[in-house]
Image (cartoon, rainbow, N blue to C red; front, side):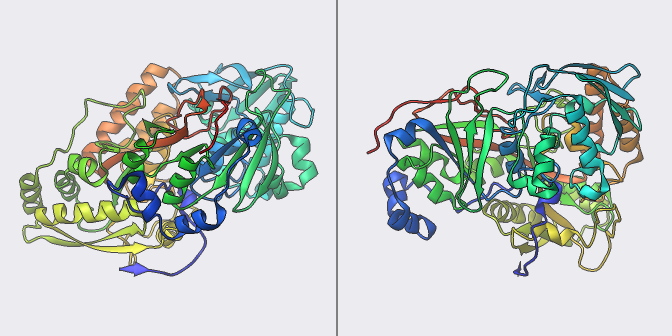
Length: 550
């Protein structure tokens, strides 16, 4: 069933990163790609094809992105793509490297004198914003006070729910006072909302207009944003970490996956995020390097934990035993994903590799359903977005669930309005209506939670979270989360997160399905690129080599 109603894009509210594109091309290869690139691809080839000058090739890195951005203001960022771009303009106090280690950025060091209730950060000296004004403690206070101010109407205010006040100690020392012990504050500051804005630029732009004229301390200076055309950045000649090799970076939105691939192969784009169905095709090109890393994201089938039949944990476990994850990864996604057995990506240091797993066992699933009183089977409704990945996942699991006795009716919604459909049943202020008329039994969801387990478990499984779309309630999980947030010892906290994963997996509030991969196509003349599993564009060490176009 397709619902074609239109409304504003609500997927952003839950940081859902949509990386679906057109359908896979199979084994046609590059010749077939050129011949069969219909629709937008044909339009591009006929009217937009152009050769870049040698000067342009040497001075500008052009990155093809999957969608138009929404904002470059950290106070209103909700889409992962926006955060990945704005991090090149505005920097954080802390950051994660590609090995997922937390490191200083604009802060040199930090400590807590009282077990996470107060955090003191010592700032880097001699750093300037793009307009020449000084980066200091006053700028840090301005940034977080702005997000906290109700008049700002920031979409990121929930990310600072534990922050009571930001105080200037001296020019290069800032104190964060929390309303409850919060051990994860340094890790949270590495998120896009923590990108420090230039106060004078905000004042000059007049509040929300800052999104069109952002300024920070980053390696690149904002030049222009032409909607549906490009975002252009130019290197910061006074960058505090030294000379940047790239002169310019341009981000070009190209929504259609086949078109992106054609433009990459031609040289009109230097880097693109490749749709998983095109990976084999891309590898056949002599001028493209394909780099794949596990993505810090999860894909799952959420279950309505407050409505029969999935209010019974036995039924939820049965659904997990009914799914063949290896089959999904190998055949549906052609090996371009990894099976999922828990609520956080396995790349995270605190991932629990000793917890229970739901191996494919349809016979066991049927037995459990019979014990739960559903020996005759059960009828349920699954919500899905009308995207290639969601369609494929839904089609793959339907027969597997049916074999176990779970008969699924699929309702598909336009991807642009998919998450709006949830707003009637779970509101921004945390009100739940899990048994209201028309509510889902199951839904396909995804989450990009960053580089630590907190970013997945707290928003998705805390009983008071408005991102807990499975309506999952477990007092033990809430209590253990509170304990983790008041534990500043990293090893002890990691162990608590491992216990939380085991507890959640045992409850099975979702059907755990697969973890996506980031697959980047890169022109061979691009040197020094390292794909970040969080999806950031780290360009400080990237350079371009001369290349003659065919």
